Amino acid sequence: MTYKSIIPLVLLIALSSCKSQLVEKKVTPKPKNVILLIGDGTGLSQVSSAFFFKETSPNYARFKTIGLIKTSSSREDITDSAAGATAFAAGIKTYNGAVGVADDSTAVKNLVEIVSTQNIKTGVISTSSIQHATPASFYAHAINRGLYEDIAADMVTSEIDFFAGGGSKFFNKRKDGRNLLVDLQNKGFKIDTTALGSFEDIKQQSKMGYLLASNHLNPTAKGRGDYLSKATELGIQFLNKEPDNSFFMMVEGSQVDWGGHANDADYLISELIDFDDAIGKALDFAERDGNTLVIVTADHETGGFTLASTPKKTESGETYSSYKEITGTFSTKGHSATLVPVFAYGPGSEAFSGVYENTEIFHKILKVTNWIDKN
Ligand SMILES: [Zn+2]
Image (cartoon, rainbow, N blue to C red; front, side, top):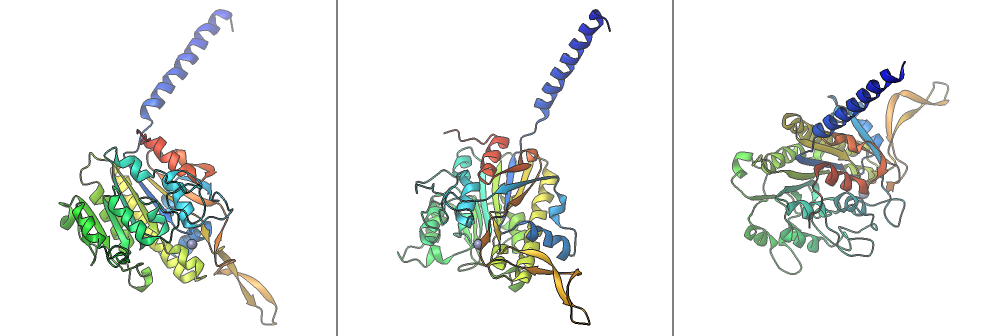
């Protein structure tokens, strides 16, 4: 090749790489809405159980972008749900038991506080009481997760637009005698303590709260039914009723964790399948909408759960492991330190692949949406 023929070639390459950079910048899409689904205590074996025990194809199988997070809290290798959720909600590592406060016990701004000043609607949904550690970390600040009545009071002052869960007693059967359900109504909430309604029933409301148990909701197999899927659908409809507005919604499958603590594989798997159904509702909406980022992860793993081969005996009495039959086994009654998976779908989802700290979930959400704290 002559010197003269190289110059146009170099120019051409330079120009074409310039062009592709421009195009790339143009098409990098920003999600308008974010739905964060947290399966409490949901490690890889818990997720895997849906692939063996759910009768239909798991919604987890619909994701293309997968990552892993490190879940340790600020002081311990193994996190609890309070420090785990505070990492997602506020982007900081804190001590176990801390709800929305840093390691030095000072309050830290959470996602709901950051985005609600930007006219972004917010919601939280759980199958536990709404004051339990995971949902609480998105609207409350408490030095100890057990301060349920203080956490309930923080709901009144928060900017949350939609909530569904249990825990009515922390609003209306309090030691201080106050009835915070009245305070919530004065703030514009309609509160329903009987059942989830239809969207038609609630679409005129500015804020909506469902408190469907005195404390926690029942397990799905013991009367809760498809509450979590319905609440997820209803929350999406409610927060998206003015389609020009963005929304952020957190949905927790709270009781996968409790099946793990109880070392009860049936409880765990039924809760995981129920959570997977709710994931399906979020993904169905995101597919239709095209502007919604769905992130599914867990605060930590619980129980050291394994889909183990089953110990059997041959006719002659020798023991062996049968690979034909899975037995859900556990190694602890508590949490474990194992990395937990992150699944992401929609615009901005690519940012969630890789191996990173749990606090990055918060930072990545703000970065891909450009919902960065403007105050
Ligand atoms: Zn737990």
